Image 1 (spheres, rainbow, N blue to C red):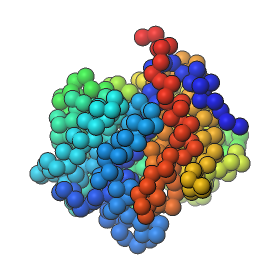
Image 2: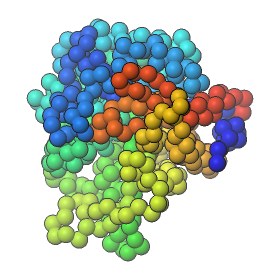
Image 3: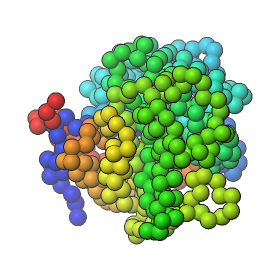
Length: 458
């Protein structure tokens, strides 16, 4: 059944922000143009066995060369905000050293183009494309990278900050720490707890240094952090599985939320792995825990875990438990919208959190164009269902301020290459033709109701 956008719109306050989201490496292409140098994702993609079909980001959606048309596309959808990321390898191509003016020029045009169209600009400074040169020093495992990030943040905000509506330091550090250094799925593809633990603290430190850099340039620019927090459900009611879920919460959420919002790593995590963390220098935790103006949640699917009874199982000593819902997306992720509500409630109970934007939510369904249209009803249903949960949370008094659909368009889906499609706009990679999907038309109709009169009381 079709959920009427006007009916759903009535459940949101008039100043709720509806937007769309992308990331630089996933859409821009033009990897060797205008002074950009390689990132760790260029190296990773070009190594066989890492990314499906050896796909890479060389062309992607060719957004770098189609900027004006793509900004027109965003405007045509009627959304109020666009969340994009800035490519560090375009701004400071070697991570340290010379600043590349042509890279800054591109984001000038992007931000000016958004302003000219009345669209809010939500920038992310780091969405995984670390300049490859920094890998020579150890990448995110090296403390020096945190200071390189601080300078990059200051450089980008000095140039663009006067026209941004909000900025995030990092996107999903869970991925750039655990998925990239412990599980080996993302660049640089390490499978090493010690490397991951170093990357964890250096990333947290870089976030804090970045916040300080942003505030030194633009004291009133709302600064936040985007986290793909995991709703960790126990696979059963057994005490062993329940405590496993609590450990998983600390390992997957607490190691980021704790330092940022409490100034401390979780006790269970420190007891198990603290001796393998890099040196925590005096002042680090204060730097990491500077107050934020907002935080972003990227949510797709719950995490279900059981206790791992294997001898010597490393903290958090869990293994996956089976899904409960019988619906899954084309990438194999369980669809369970109530987890979004459970997660927001649990995180707000555990930490003193500022305003929240859902900075990514969406679904992978790979249907193509038939008779000029893309009927992606399951994606529409997914988005509507999760927006319904978001409206419930607002009704309960949680400060949910906006929602960004992932993604504006089909793009390079990291290790999955181009075979997985998350867009509300279809991309034909041979012709680069964009076709708004059924979900995109519906989402545009919903977004078009905003901003409207019934703003929430200040």
